[in-house]
Amino acid sequence: MVTFIGDFECKTDDKGRIVLPAAFKKAVGKDELRFVVKKHLFDNCLVIYHYSHWEEELGRLRHVGKFYSQKRSIFLRGFFKGSAEITLDGNGRFLVPRRLMEQIGVGKDVVLIGIDRYIELWDRDAYNAMGDNPEELAGLAELLMGGDSPDED
Image 1: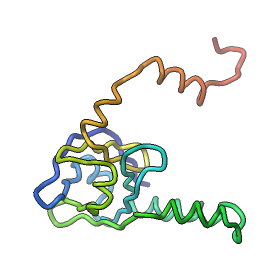
Image 2 (image 1 turned 180 degrees about the vertical axis):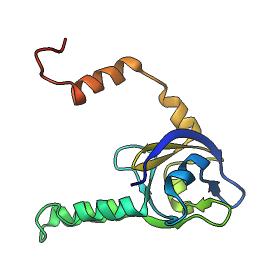
Image 3 (image 1 turned 90 degrees about the vertical axis):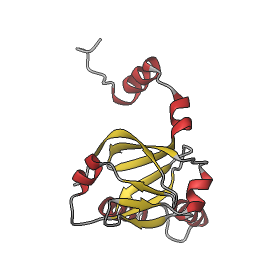
């Protein structure tokens, strides 16, 4: 099981390659250096899945909706649109297709954020513009994770 933790500022080189941070390389190990990258469904960033996790996502998608459904077809087409397989080269770099980088407006400076089973790739300025909002985070934690136990306040 691959788990990604941490956020790292990185730069793209002249060819658009990004060095995968050492912590992420360690999480992946040396066996499987394949990933899938696609546009995030909700945010203006890219999502990078380790290939083993991507295969799990595909397993879930195969059971979404009725097989002969127009809505299912539209969803799957949109979900897979622009996705691409990427691999690490011998120097631990990867190249995201230019069309995906342009889609989210990435410059030379990017942020890679480990979010458990995937990595988000953000333009650094867009990521920093989001800022921190501890009150919002606390509210979301309570909404999504809060329990109904009578012992809780």
